[in-house]
Length: 100
Image (tube, rainbow, N blue to C red; front, side, top):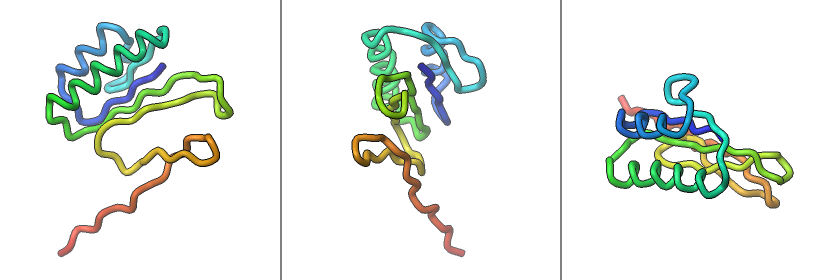
């Protein structure tokens, strides 16, 4: 499994290092059971709900499906998961233009 964080708190980043290896700033990897993976993601969700985080998080893991993986996302991001014909895909929200 891989978790990628953007613009999050040092507390959450430190908490993830308890279970996962931070191979690059904000990129965490590890291999766990479904139960442990769900527990780790619940910690991420709790931090987002309690910490007023403006960033984003994504968790990706291998799965027995057509594309070979599955994922969950949290927070503000232009990339929005969409399901089409049973396959998760990513769509992009248009960039917001700043009026001058």
